[in-house]
Image (cartoon, rainbow, N blue to C red; front, side, top):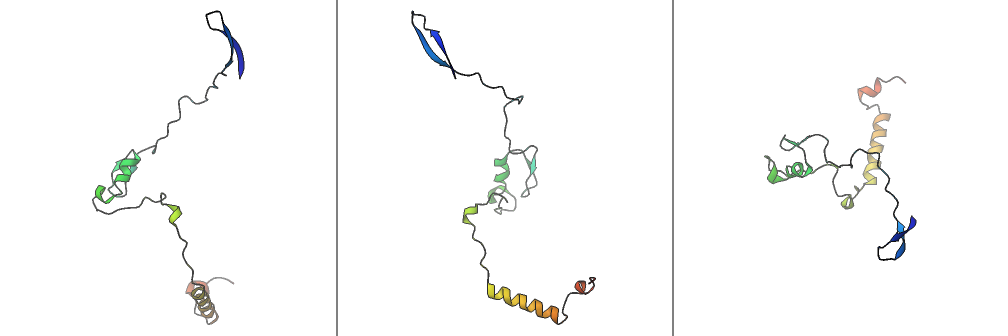
Length: 116
């Protein structure tokens, strides 16, 4: 910031900060955020929509002909996710059965046709 003297018109002068001129943008116009660059078809009713609010309304039971609530994939609340619980004993038994099947020759035909 630079400073300069300003005449107040009543015989007084003051020393004030002069704001720097704004840098010009390289863009021709302000950036406009639109939800869709082209109309999007709703999988619930088959119609095309240009705004997100109308599209999301078709995912509700009251907004589609099927009367079913749909979930918009990609917008789930990830804070409520719980990872699946693994049963390590069942996993080990499945692996042992698979090894036993391979050792006894009980393999799908596609595996017997592969070159060794």
